[in-house]
Image (tube, helix red, strand yellow):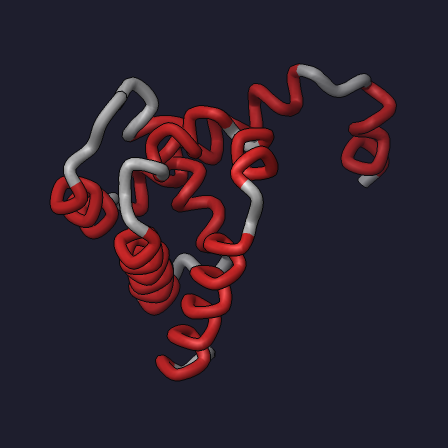
Length: 130
């Protein structure tokens, strides 16, 4: 497990990298994510990332060892906040901490089904052989 100093160091590195990234590069990434995240300051974005990291840590303590920060962020951006054009910072923090493990796993299950739908039968050969 990472300690809080390591986490804060990573958050500072991300903030510096974000500030030094050309805007064109940022716009090439997921449009929805950028549209939503650009409304907040760099400090607020770091606070959101820290809240996500904290929530994932809490879920891991409760037994969801395989969860990752990007999975929760993906759930929030592509499910919870999918239709949001503007989101209050306080509401975003509340959404992070109110996310239930069952909601997250339902999203990941659905995402897995959608991704598997686009694969060829040969991609499942290893599973079939077991």
